[in-house]
Length: 421
Ligand code: SR1
Ligand code: MG
Picture 1 (cartoon, protein in one colour):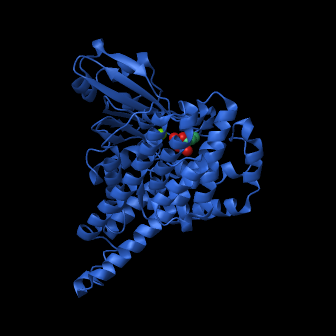
Picture 2: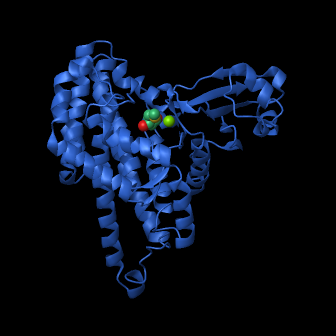
Picture 3: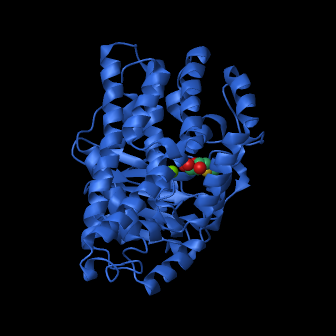
């Protein structure tokens, strides 16, 4: 069996030999003699294969012992595959069916065999192509509320919660990458960073901007010191697969305990960056403007559905360490419970706004860029899109406390874009 041989990265040929006798593969894909294998990984870390055969198809994901985006000079532990698997199990139990089904896991080989999502596309690519997904916002809003609430002290008892916290405290390597890549690297000169040279002046100003750096440090402290819930930890539009009817969340290897607003802010930032990138991706016409409005509407619906579902869970499932019913509802004071809920949502929102501003900076100035901006070939046009996004990012990070509603973020974006979005 695979597990007993030394770890070795797969390739399209060796995969057939090495997984051909695996019961999960035979059951899902059929006899290995008829397999067609394609390596499709375009992320920063892993190998991803689609295997198709007579009985169906499956995805085989394998961690590499280094960061794929950089190469072997950045060694990386294979343990991330274990943490991803543990996170997938928990997130799926909290919002069943919103993650790919896992058919097989081999910790030693860092391999997961999982459901081949089809006809889903990576959301980021869908947004770059101008596609609309009508059910996605509701599904993501509920996913966020269910996973963030059900993984928190509001829902979990102290024994399970502490045991879980201990498990994910082990995901130190990937958590450390987030700490550096989001909150520190973009705000100083660091060898891992890169940016569009047309932004040189703006980048120098950002790295001299004390208020912005203070905000980044405050938000880093919030990320490191606020173990509110089990996060996906890397919930950008490349970690979501969509089709007309369905939305799935993939790639949970950055899972860690952290503030609820982190997943929400990461996702909203990537939607807002997709808005800023549109003028560089397609003609600036009525259709593009309508599409940008659709993305902004989607972001608003995600947040509004999150609040609605979080509120429902608060009222029906608040049975964890922080339950608090004894203090309010059980003493005929439902208002007290609702005030606590409002304070909670307020805190999550302001965190999310701040984290969204940080995510925007790191995607333009740090290591891990996004194809929305990178694919704009006209350097000046690209710089314009990136610069407007950075201006929004600064306001979101530094002035996060002044955004009372998500509609105010729309107003900010419309002002920067000079458009009535
Ligand atoms: C070295 S990992 C760089 C980035 O890729 C992942 O997708 C995460 O976003 C991480 O920050
Ligand atoms: Mg990923």
